[in-house]
Image 1 (tube, rainbow, N blue to C red):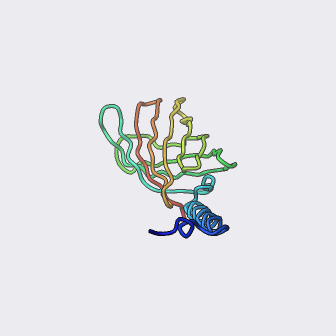
Image 2 (spheres, helix red, strand yellow):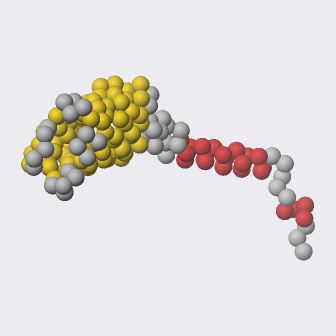
Length: 150
């Protein structure tokens, strides 16, 4: 039968193991960005999208997203788009919103020339912002994806 005194760790050994384990956990969390704030997305973005109108018709669009400024989590800028196909007007949308630490983007938009408002819900994943815009002025829904413009 083993001696119970031999199974107990020597004084100080357990503390060293705990410190090593805590250090490893901290390094893993830090490397995965657990303590990182929101990404800085200020700049110009371009891509493509599709607007779906209430009657079911669609328009292919080329959005250009300009994040004019970012102060920590607060954003403001414009969303300009040209229409490639379909019967939708092009235009400029101004927005203000925020980006969370999880890189989720939410914004309220005002539609220039239409007197309407809309909401944007998007996510930054890698170097791509993908999301949905709900335009209350005409009832359309736009799905878009943009990457940094060169």
